[in-house]
Image 1 (cartoon, helix red, strand yellow):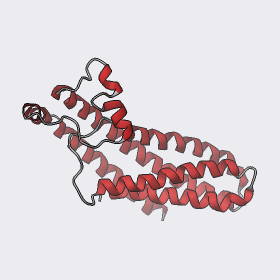
Image 2: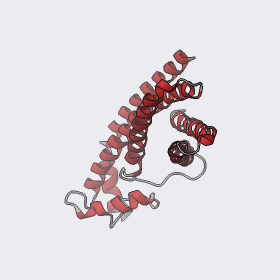
Image 3: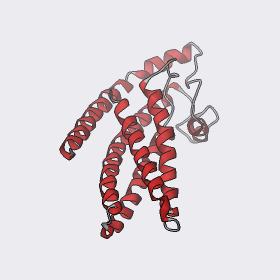
Length: 211
């Protein structure tokens, strides 16, 4: 079973890198399109952005106060390259975090079976997972916005984002319950349920974006 999981992660990771490289190459041809949009008095930013993107990259966003990030076609091309780099890092660190979650699940199960010598390993893995998880989230939340709005209807990106709400909530609940267990051991089943829910939603969000 472990070999199957490792093989699946390897295939997903490899296809993810190839996709990222292909998408990066497409950014270089966007300047002509951006210049055309400016000539047509079209918007250089999408109509809808998440709040973190709007605060940083909106028309009056914080980044617009720095030289080199004024809202122009040339700078938008640069922003799209930055976006691609950040999202590639988001995907790579995301897969590493997924691997950490699998390891944490194995260690956590042994703890529940009474192997308490692994408690320090469990705590160290938890620290690493939190760093990896929230770094992954930050790279997505603070990346420059795409050029156009998402199409109407259901898409893999929208499913990915919906699952992100689930695993973010689960990650926060898992951390809160981990602290509460020290005072109330009866919360262990809830902590475990939150952790598995987080893992399930996180793994699904990684898979759906590829398939």
